[in-house]
Length: 185
Ligand code: ADP
Ligand code: 5GP
Image 1 (cartoon, helix red, strand yellow):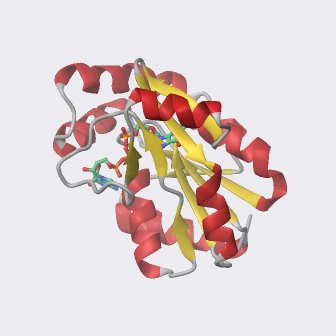
Image 2: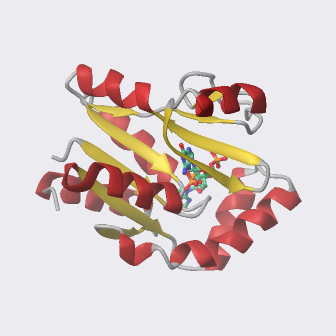
């Protein structure tokens, strides 16, 4: 298996669900916890899902060169991959797993090159994406519309990834992803 696994997709495609399932089943996979300036959702835990930072805290880390990549994924909301996360995970001899937006995914693939496998997660249709985002119930109507508006443009990044999977039936998707990881393609 590659030492770096990158999962990217438009919001609501199911990448976090897939990643969480893989992490629960394989102790050598470790999640790279990103920093973000967005508010914490009720079920999320600081230091586990994200490092939730103020804009000032995020900017301070940017200035001290703490990030491999940062992205204003949605207007006014910053996300970034911390160098310290990769060091921590690789020092333990584990495989680092990223759940990032498509631009971040492409940048991380460029950074890690052959050491990384970049996986694009796709939903069968925009209607299904909307349904899943609504069912997740985490977004305001404004935030939901922002995510949907961005999705079609984000799909154009698919060909820049090593491999893409269609997340229709979750169980089958996870099975397919595991097969891809073992084959290391
Ligand atoms: P992302 O991390 O890409 O934003 P999530 O993993 O949060 O997406 O998934 C979005 C919503 O869709 C969640 O409520 C999740 O439970 C649901 N979901 C994920 N995969 C499937 C699937 N294959 N079929 C139906 N619902 C799914
Ligand atoms: P959410 O707010 O739904 O958790 O995440 C929104 C988007 O930001 C998702 O596509 C998620 O994968 C992406 N994201 C999370 N962390 C990072 C990061 O460190 N860098 C980049 N570029 N995107 C990230």
